[in-house]
Length: 345
Image 1 (cartoon, rainbow, N blue to C red):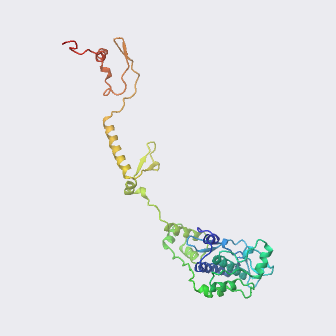
Image 2 (cartoon, one colour):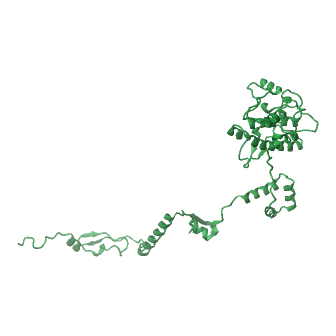
């Protein structure tokens, strides 16, 4: 439920437009009617327990105070949030569970279109007295149809309080188009993939059509969701994708199996690509003209000549020719000679 609670949705907007609130109220009535058909009463309807999914569809949550009931049987346990509790529950009388949920839905409707609650008080006893009397503020920005609907839903007499069918037939509800969620078509490609796991197609179809919540239908929903999400291409098997993204394969020297292949991806900016190409050319030139170093052997003894010691040559003889110079030649090259005909007229 990615969009959080209806409570936060209302607070962020101060109050809702009546048409938006009517769409939400249709969904609240649908959820309430559905649990009533299952002989369940919620007893804690409030915006904090109404959650919004990614498409702003309402889901009824938190059944911690709910209970099952028998038709025609009243309940005795007072429970729920005080501001949303019905007058008959607050006064300690036995109550009809369906009427209690309808009252709470009316409080939620008031909160949506007004931006505040009809019954609020820091003192619990005075709050209960206000709920039993049923006096609440009617803002001037409400339409006449919204005012009359609230007066029938927030009726302190549970016998004359509107039912769900009467609320739906009210003009305020008829003026708005209810948001009906269409059931998505069954994806038979996903059914075939589930069949490969060893499940029977008839069992999968029957569970989906009957809206049964189990591991099989959960698997179906997850596979459908995975199918809708765009997946990245399996790029490493395509030579074109590799060249496009600058991906190369390096096989480690100390490994033979193909599972040890290391994938390296480079940046694909044009400048980096041109620099890489020029660098590769330079490296090729260096590799062409530079000879490998000679293997290290025993250390050579220093060369002694004319009483002077010369260190042995290191590196390549092709580049180091110092051994060709004799001490005499070195002395002659370093000696300063006077210029010729310096004292001649």
